[in-house]
Amino acid sequence: MKVLKDVFRVAFSNIVGFGTSFLINFMLPAILTVADYGHYQQYILFISFTYLFNMGFNDGIYIKYGGKDQEDLDGEEVQQEHNFLLVFQLLMFVAMMAVAIWQRNMIFALFSVATLLDTINNYHANFLQATGRFKVFSNGNVLKSIFNIIILLIAIFIFQTDNYYIYILINISAYLFLTLFFERHYIQQHGWSKTFDPRGKLKIFQVGFLILVSNMSLTFVGNIGRWVANTRYAIEDYAQYAFQNSLLNVILLIVNAVGMVFYNVISRRSDQDLLNTIKQACVFLGIASGLAFFIFKQIILVFFEAYIPSINLLSITFIAIPYIMLSKILIGNLYKTQVPEKIYFRDSIIYLVLSVILVVGTDTIFNNLQMVAIATTLCYILWFVYTTTIKFDYLRNSFKEILILVSHWLVFYLTANVMGTWTGFGAYALYLGVVLIFSRKDIVDMMKMLK
Image 1 (cartoon, rainbow, N blue to C red):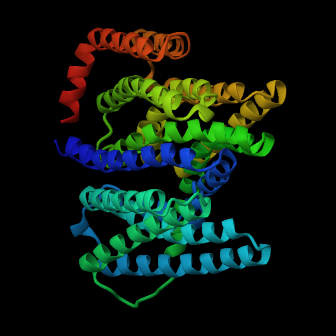
Image 2: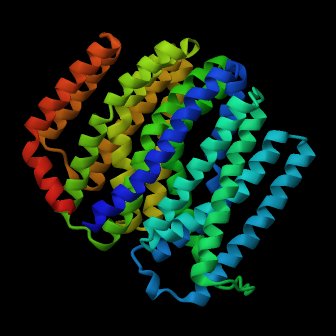
Image 3: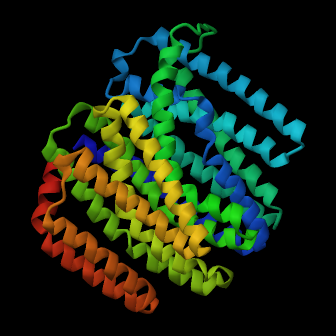
């Protein structure tokens, strides 16, 4: 029952974040020009890589404390790690800001500030998640989302600003709010100490760096299409691709919530029945998420005519949701808990390189963003096939599971592109009902297993 409680707790915080992202992703395109929204999305693309600048320290903390209780921790060791992280990130910030000043690049200067704050937040998030303190983690993210949306609404409706730099600063202020929240809680729980000892930290970097690069590789696969659109297409075309990608990421906020909780579950308990249950849950939840597409489609048609071309792109990338869910919730956590770091590193790098070749090669041949979206979706499907058939063969898919997945490709694409919005919604909901009836025994078993 604690597993479900933690899932719901983190999911609630991400649902609040979902609401914030939903408003941002729909309000800013209505206020900014397509070109300015494209520039804003360039900043968002950059900050999706802030986690790289901890050089693996935060990931090492996640692995080191995964599955441990707070009562079992060495307080002095925790203090030293926390203080080391602060000093290390301040030095990284100074170096990045020096580059920004030298290049006279305002966006990179703002990115430097966001990186400092987000890496500190990421340390606290990893530490809290690893030690099972999801309540604190969730509360911080809920308050951050509320703060973010209040400031955003003030900027839009009171000051009525259409300067995209203002919205970048609002994004940074939300990071600062969360940093202050986490630091305040940390001091209340662990006190404050000036102790600083860099000894022993290299081992954390060594383990964490491999995990960092491996995680980055899996994450970057989803951003290859955005980089291709950003470097090979006009800013207006990039804005279309980035817009649909932002809507997809709104759904994936919930995915991340579940993935956070299941790392602790898998690190403590890894029987194959449980793992197959988690796999089935990912598939069912991913397929059910397809209903959100039709809501997004109607909103775009009514309120955002300038972004109607993004609908077709979204209908393609939405097919990947079940596979993205499985990758983030189960496969990634299995690699972290059951596979040596070097093997995880090797597999993820190979996956990244092959994905880049596939997506860039597809764009070179067809010069079409729809084909880029198809290639990106295909990358996730091929990773799913490899990991569930070869790497973790006990997750091998049954005939029924394959039938459901193939039917999902066909039904979703047809209802999303051939039918009208609400006709498609109804037809897809009917399909979901058939899937639920067809799999009712599996769903009942899933609920029992996860209690």
